[in-house]
Length: 427
Ligand SMILES: Nc1ncnc2c1ncn2[C@@H]1O[C@H](COP(=O)(O)OP(=O)(O)OP(=O)(O)O)[C@@H](O)[C@H]1O
Ligand SMILES: [Mg+2]
Image 1 (tube, rainbow, N blue to C red):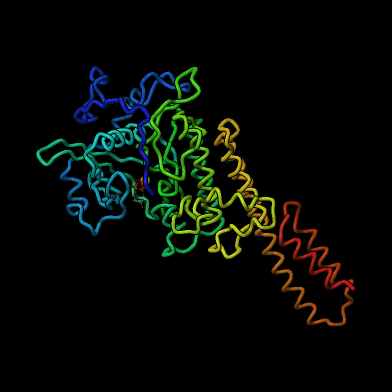
Image 2 (tube, rainbow, N blue to C red):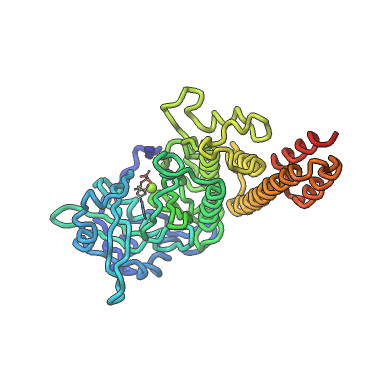
């Protein structure tokens, strides 16, 4: 999906500077460092990203261009695993710093545009990922920055995520459909990543590019957010928002941000709501190939509110009905809340995390109740076959006993199906 870059202040001139070898930055030179974030600190911390970066930069490894060339067999097409707005991504193998340790797989992203915007995004990625640390954020291992005879080279080296992105699994039919439970776990992990950035890290970070292709999946389908090229520090003390040029991806950016250029953490919450509807429906936020009324996901789903009977019509057909209807309705309501027109009414990401945990619980309870209903129905059918003499009232009592065991949380088709069955049997 295309990123849009729209500079509101067209008179603004960007001064081009050569890229620094970050590891060699000295404190006195920090001012010369081309900042992608402000340095005055955000409302959550007196220190800004550049100051924190200075403290933590030693954790990042500085690679030579030749090292990365070797790691990818000279950036061979065979090793290419993806392509985005920034450039191409390759799978590579690097030698760890510790002697005799086994080589590790990495993903190497190579900037293929020479413009200032690409450089700024590269720098933002190094600075933000050099500072933040969370199980749901992709780990940046190091970078390479060379201004040589062969031109400018900017590369990033990440931990390798073997299951590609959520986008691949949700929209590419070559992959098996994602089960309901996995979708919920991915939503929860991604929400925890955002909650950390907004509410828990020393500096508040607004991610600004939340979308399926930036949610990478590890070998256990655990999600990690990648791409911090558009990230910004939260507002300074006493400010409600960051004023910025509007950047992001069509179909995901909050309308208030697009209209005013005022960026807040609630802009990310809106994008999260969009992804929740993508998880529910298996459709992209924008699909030009669909009939006019269905091209914009958010407009289409409005015709199928969560509390109505027709809501089920928007559910991803690839789920083949294998989901908790109660959980799905609750998820759609959560998405609607995230998609409130007024940014203030949108929930905090920590609240979103809490609700997602409840939805996972509801879905688990419903599934185990359904499983026990199926087993019990089989058992009862066998009993009925064996003893055709049994009085209907006896069978009915057995079913009622079973129903009682289903527990308080069950509020679903399984229970209704069970009741209908009873009515059929009782004379
Ligand atoms: N750390 C990683 N491990 C494994 N695969 C990765 C990694 N980072 C990126 N990829 C793969 O490369 C693809 C392209 O990523 P990239 O972030 O460059 O572009 P994008 O997210 O698809 O688009 P955009 O430029 O709008 O962000 C991803 O969808 C993913 O499949
Ligand atoms: Mg990306």
